[in-house]
Image 1 (cartoon, rainbow, N blue to C red):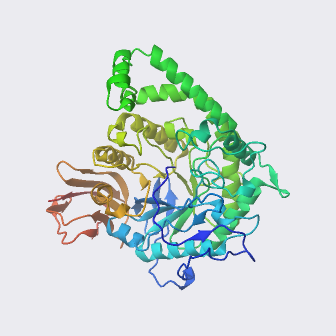
Image 2: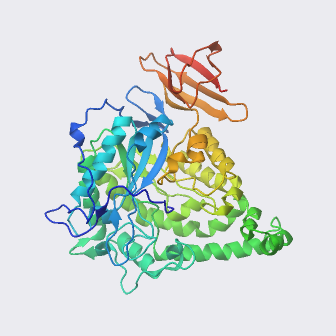
Image 3: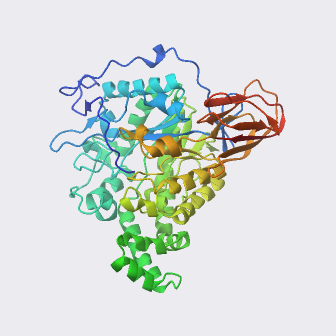
Length: 533
């Protein structure tokens, strides 16, 4: 969702391809990528869905944690975007050393298919090299077809579809004046591009969704069997189109009426914060999670209609195409752009040949209003907690596991770290996996990476997890689980440092080094406690 900083490494231009592959852009000499079939790394466990849990081939419940790495491309006015600059060599190994084992790898339609039916095989081979590197380090990947504002071919802050698939009618993309997302709110070209996509308007004799499906089929056929790949996130934060502009207007209207009529919002305090505070954005402090839900509920009916009438048929199309490839890896369900604010997600699981697809992951997103600004230190746990509580209700309705696709953000200082810790604790209480937004060059040197995201957590548990968490004040990690069967596999817990004390079911156990702590257990109920120095 948000625009990451660039880590300039390899470069690929989306220029017109020859014979279904592209030449390198001028001055770009990417290293030759190894064929994934030639890698010599150890087998990675196959992951599947069991109810609301992710389990591996040993039957262990898995909790995955990691980062978004998103290649949106670099905009150059008057030229095609340059891709392949976001991945830093050695990132997967560094992540693994810090207890992270999952990447949401953002790629774009424009990078893959810059002209109709012509695929950028050089770029895809580059992506294959990233997958190989992740496999070497034991890091899983799910592929995210990223977009913001549908396309970035004529816009600095957008990304996604190639120009030929961006059907805006008589409208043109306009430069940003206030905030990068404003095209969602009132951009007629953005609305028209999305409406054309959801209505499957024809391009060169085929519906634009058909082109999109064929592009994804090509990607799945190329990478679907790669051991590092666990699934496919077909469309980042789907936006309704013109009706999305109406949602914005309805929400603004409800914001005004709620502010005026709701007696729990102090008008005196609001005026003081707006006129006398060093940071006028502090007026948002007056709006709790309950206020947010009252305000955003103005868009509920429109988003429900979009989810059920436009987005669900699209998800069914993409799930069907995936299974036609003979691929049974995870289908990721994202919520719409406005459900990032807590509007309920209304799609069911995909239905294929009359049967509900079970190998499905719900992958919600949410951020506070203050994200990526100097005011992020004032982010509201209550507001974002209420959004994720709604996502929790969606998970329970769907009956599937969750991998939170986007959350977090970044700004200077460390006063916002408690907000990140609150969300990590919330995810732990729900037993949710997650990928933090977002990696940029130098991110692995930041304090949030080294001291907040790097923390003790279960990786693989030989049974069903009842609860786990980390008490930062007392530096104590706990895990409770029930093991039903004998197994040769071990429970694995990431410990970021050598602990002071550890016990299994009241008996002391020794942990002599940081990293993955592995322990064998018999069937029964188990409790593990680890206290750090």
